[in-house]
Image (cartoon, rainbow, N blue to C red; front, side, top):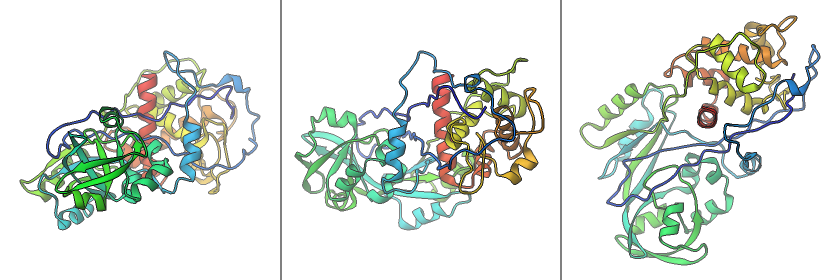
Length: 394
């Protein structure tokens, strides 16, 4: 049962960005990610014959939907020149600018894995007031949604001194890629327009590089993005506020909690979505089924590529043999001993393993995902795709 009749993947998340007017307006920030696939080797034969592929398929989302352009993004992402996507948890905004010492101190807080400081201010473009951020393109790229991070030409143009706009700003200002436009801040610059992109930060109209930021007189380090997987938000906010004192403000960027469904049914799941729901409900009450769905898709494309991986992991949920020996179970009435290649065994076993690592609580979920695959980028990708499953399947 290691293959599917039909595979459907949620499309990468799209963040609507509304142009926000006023000086250095970064108060409302929202970040979304798409998914980078893990590499997997050709499939390995199971010790128990697989069932027919038609027995376990992924149903289309309610209301239908396109087959998704994720495959193209995956291909682009593998050769786009960036190493990973970083999931921000918190934004720190200081209208007068964060000091170098403060930025360094943010990075030293317990549980913080990455910090990115950005410049910003409100300037004039085409006679209109716009919010601009100044960034190091190489660094900022990893903090943007995958579709944007994968656009090699866009980042090359930005690094060469062009500017990029949000879709809304590009439309409102009637910008045309390749044309040059005057930006007026402390000084004026005439820069080529590279094109529109989704930045994942609400209220940002334009993005320029560090050199243009300096010339335009943007406020240096007006904000910082903080990534701290596994740290409770109340704890993280408290430590950041203690560090800042009375200055600045702190904004949570974490998405709402993923849906948890503890209801179970006596029957056997007939498709992967039902299998993910039932496995979470039976073996890890408190964990969202969407986490299993995201891991299953990232690890094997829901059983379409079952390994072994370069590390020796196999099956639809990619267990190492040593981990499977400890956590593998037989479930849903399957015959014989636990079979790592059988989704009806592998998915419940993954739920059991994640639950033991703390996935039954929102605060413990990032750490449990990290235990499944020891990489902060993996935590970001699982959570991002889990939110897409929640949005599309409810």
